[in-house]
Length: 333
Image (cartoon, rainbow, N blue to C red):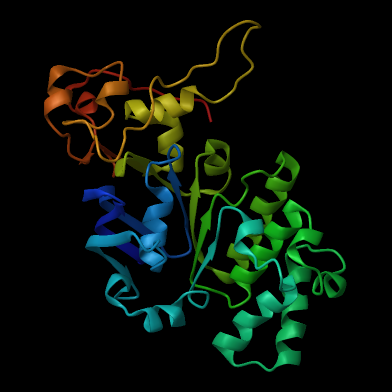
């Protein structure tokens, strides 16, 4: 199946005041999104998931910079485009749902005008036509009383409605690719289920591809076809969603799976991965997960494992699958 987006060898860094050396936040990431499919990008906070997407979209902060790599979208390298050229693609062919809609929406402009602005900018609609189309998309994403909500400010809407506005804004121009960065964060489980169902329905209707950035493995199991697991700025595992949940190979992925709450006997502690994600300026040598890995050997601490195929297109950055040792096995989905 052809890929709508191919990221190759992406490296992104950030500068800090008073520090000469730049901190590498994303280190050689390869990622492909097949047309019409949903790809999950999973990992703890600080692993480089959002930086990867913001690099592709040309939305890094002023102190951020793409050092190397390609992001091929329809044969065009997005990383080589000017800001003016990127603006023609952002919101039009590629849309993004940001983590927190309250901070992504302009607080002093009504939500309807913010969505209509994209239509007027990219499709040349007049004011009335853009308003009619916005109300139509509000109705499609399940916003009640869409005509009245059009004139509401962000603070007048609940978190679930603001997220639906963001989805409506991202879908109004029928993009080829939707990047959803933690779209269900801070929403209760019933609203989360509605949002995921809505995204599936819109994908089925339009045929778009989705990059779902999340730390929630329940969301991954619900909506994704293919999964990339990131740790400390690198991809450590890639697999079909069914293969990942049935036979995850990397110790970090298995730790994430084991951390999921289950119906355990009273008094039994939940599993947690010891330690924290390493500081960008103090990455361990060898495998970046080795200081937190209970299966690490001396080889892991001095030698960097490659991202290797362990069978059937399942990629893993670990020496354990190669040697037949360490954590392998199934996890109930």
